[in-house]
Each structure stands twice: as C-alpha cells, then as structure tokens.
Length: 240
Image (tube, rainbow, N blue to C red):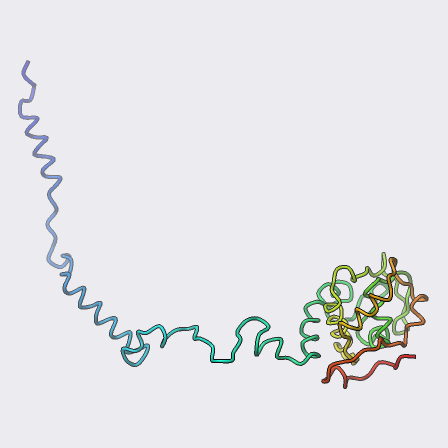
C-alpha cells in the first residue's frame, strides 16, 4: 500500500532543514568582530600597566610582586631574624610563657585572680614571687591539701596536678617567668637550667603538701640568669 501521506518524507526533511537554519540577528545584537575584541584587550593591558607600574615595567612580576624577596640578611621564618629569637631572653620567655599559661588559666583565671576558696590567686601571691625552688617544685610535682595564700585559705579539689611530665623544662621556665612578672608581680627570671636542676635532684612521685614545701619557701635555685630585665626585676629572697 502507498503511504497515507506520500509527501510526509519530504516534509520531515524540510522541517529538519528549517531547524538547522540560524535565526537572523538584528544588527545591534551581532557579535563584535574579532579584530575589535583583540584591540580592546591590548588597550586594557596597556592601561593596567600604566596604572599599576607607571609604565610597561608594571607588567613585570618582579615589580608588582606582593611578596617581594627579603633583603639580604633577613630571615622571614617564624622565630627567625627579626622575630622571637631577636627578643632578649627575658622578653622571649615572657612571650612564650603567655602562651603556655593557657593550661593554667582555666583554674587561676586569665587575670591571675583565681577562684575564692578553691584556686588560689597568682597575682600578688607569695608562692609566686617568693623562693624559686618552692615554685618549681609545685609545678613539677603538683600540690594537694589546704594551703594559705595572701592570708586566705584554699583547698583545690583533687589538688594541683603535676606538669613536669607534660611540659619540658624550658616550657615550665617560660610559664614560671611569666607568672612571676604579670598582674603586678615582679620576680627574677627562672631558667631552663634551674628547672632541670630540680628535676634531676627530686624524683618525687606524689604531690607536695604545704608542710612539705615549707623548707623551700624562701630558697632560690642557683643558676645564672641572662643579662637583661630578668636579672634586674625585684629579686626573690636569697637562698639560705
């Protein structure tokens, strides 16, 4: 049988051809010529160079580099020349000790005032500005039981935990130097060698009590202190 519409095949071809035809564009919507686009790009680049560098040298990364190379002698690494290592030993200990104090601030508070009845203050505390040997032993081995600070009684639940195993001698020295010279306190610098001396001589496995530490209340651990503010700060009582 012949198809019902013998011209249907021709119609399909005709429709397909129409679909392939692109619609006529109005003159104002026609794409810009390639030469015009290229010319605009050149103008934009030259204008940017003039604004950024004052001349075509502004196109050079060495001229407009936001991260210029350091001048000879500079050390831009953390702790490098001009950084923490450029500080005097006392200032460096204070800077690093401020960061290490974060483990203490939860109990003794950021302002060193402590919490009445539980956590004794460090600000104005004779335990902090007194003999360095007692202070080092407290942080090295911990402290338990009732104690008296600035005439007030405190009894920390569970006592103060030891930090000797968690912190190096240098870290402990930094923190102790920091608390001895913050919130109005003034005390000599405590060095890594002083902390290490106590560690080597005292192998105590339990926390101290106030009575245990009484013999060390006014003693300083001997050792040299680097010249600078750490030496000239109000000195702790001399060792006996």
